[in-house]
Image (tube, rainbow, N blue to C red; front, side):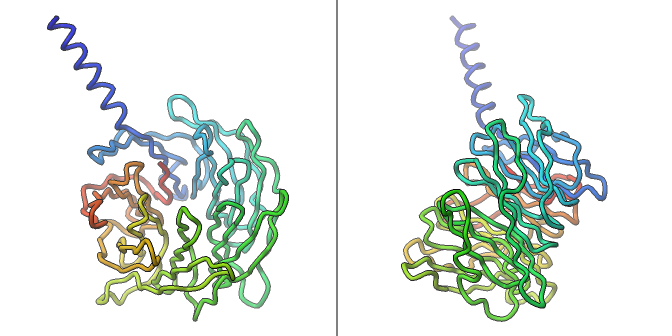
Length: 351
C-alpha cells in the first residue's frame, strides 16, 4: 500500500510539473551570434526559463506567430521573405515554405482567426502583403499587396492585425492607422487614417480589445499611446498618454504594446529609457492612466509578451542580448523583476 501511495504521489507530481511547463519560441537577428529561432521551456509557476536550444537554423527570423491550432509557426525573415514551419514533437521546427515578402524589410507577421491568411508588414518598402495558408501549413504566393507610398515621405508599414472582418495597419511613415475591410475573399481599403495623428508620432504597434471597440496605438517617436474608440460613424480619439517617466530626457523609441488578459492593464515598451510602462485601464471608458515605469534590466526592449497565465511578463532586450522575466501583480498590474537569461539578439517572444 505504501509503495502504491508513493507511486501515486510521484505520478501526480510529475504530471503537475509537466503541466506547468510551456514552450517559448524566440525570434532573433542573426547578424551576430544568433543562428535562428530558439526554443526554451518556461515554468508558469516559478517564471524560470530553461532548456535553451536552437529550434531551426534560419536567417533573421525577426517576428513570429502561431497557427490557431499551434501545429505550425510563421516568421518574417529580414532578407525579404516569410517562412512557414512544422512544429515537431520535440519542439524543433522543419521548414515548409519560404516565399517573397513582396517588399524590403519585413518586420511583422500576423495570422487571422481562421488560420487561412497571414499578413506581413514591409517596413522598408511601405507595403503590406496578404498570403493564403494551406491546410498543411504551407504558404501560397501573395494574394494581395497594398502599397502605402503616396507622397514625398516614404511609407513605413510596421505592424498589421486581423480583427473579425477588419485589417488594421500601423504605418509609421504616414503617421496613420489604415483600416481594410474584408469583402468576399479580398480586403478593400476603408480608411487610410482612422484618426488624425498630430505632429510626427510614428505609430508602430497597437493592441485591440476583444470586443473590437478600443485600439491602443504606441508611437515610436512620440513616446506616447493614443487611445481610440470605434463608433458607429468611424473612430474617435478618447485619450493621449505619455509612456516615459517625467524626469527622463534621453532618446525616445517606443516599440511594443500589449493588454492583460482581463484588459484591466496595458503595457508598453520604451527603448532608450529601457523600461516597461504600466497603465491601468478603465474597462468602461477605455481611458488609461500610467502607474509604473519598470526598468527592463537590459538594453533596447524591442518586443515583450505576457505568459499564458497572465502572471509573468517577459522582455526581449536586443542590444544587451538577454530576456528579462517579471512577476505581474494581478491586482495592481505592477511589475517586479525576477531574473534574466542570456540569448543573442532576441527580438520576438512567442508563447
